[in-house]
Image (tube, rainbow, N blue to C red; front, side, top):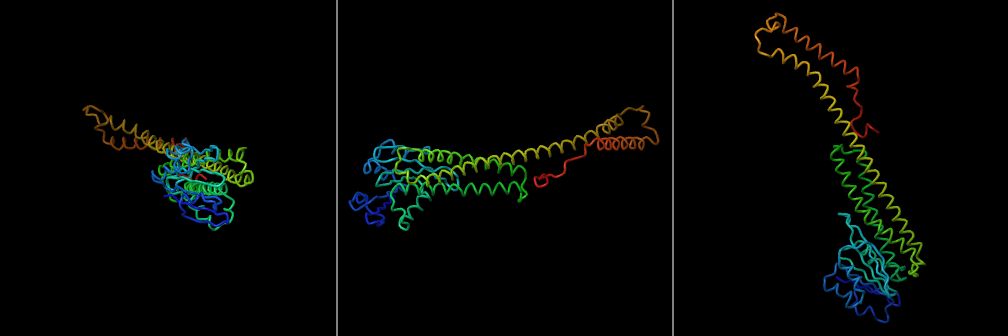
Length: 326
């Protein structure tokens, strides 16, 4: 679908005009949005707008890294939105000239849709295509925050373990979160670099008057990058803590089993000896032999138990979960 919006020289906003009308004399500037376009509609990038083949190729092929290219009468910007469910990058391409902006995206992008609906109600859009470009970038960056805030909430729950989850479940969630943070990082860091280039580019004279706005977006991206790195460190700490706790529990279990096995070793030895089928074993026919052997076995077991206890084998660490450890 192709959506059109023109702003006349009388600052009137008109939606859904025909493509030829955008070049009328009474049009101050226009915005054409290729919203989930078909193959035939995508051909208009070359047939009607005559954009450079390399820029068109970047629009039609796989997701590109965010970038900024300069052409004679316009600049070409590749931006990334974030899918709220999968956190995968979704490409938004902008062609921005003095009197036009053309956006191209294969998916429905929330940020683009919101800016599109605001043109009619906000007077600052009368400033032209570069202001629309700024508003789209600003909204895209604003949409990066909710997934990161959600991850922080999940991390807080994992630290507190409010749901009494097992160590295995927590570690699996931690690795899922680290995967999500890696996806966000692959989107946010290139966008941060792109904003840095936009701010410091000498060729974008029209941006000079809006540098403060773009600096603000860049600051948001810096904050997002820091939040991602902080959350990655938190996931590392949680992972290491739970792995350490799990290892400690395994050591405790192994120590308990070792103590039990060690106590029963001499008892098993005695029982094994008196289980042999020899006729001339002197203790076999002794009247009090059975009770004596039981007493010796009990004495050995109790002696070993108290010896292990005296040497600290039963001095296990208190606190079997993260709450007790804090």
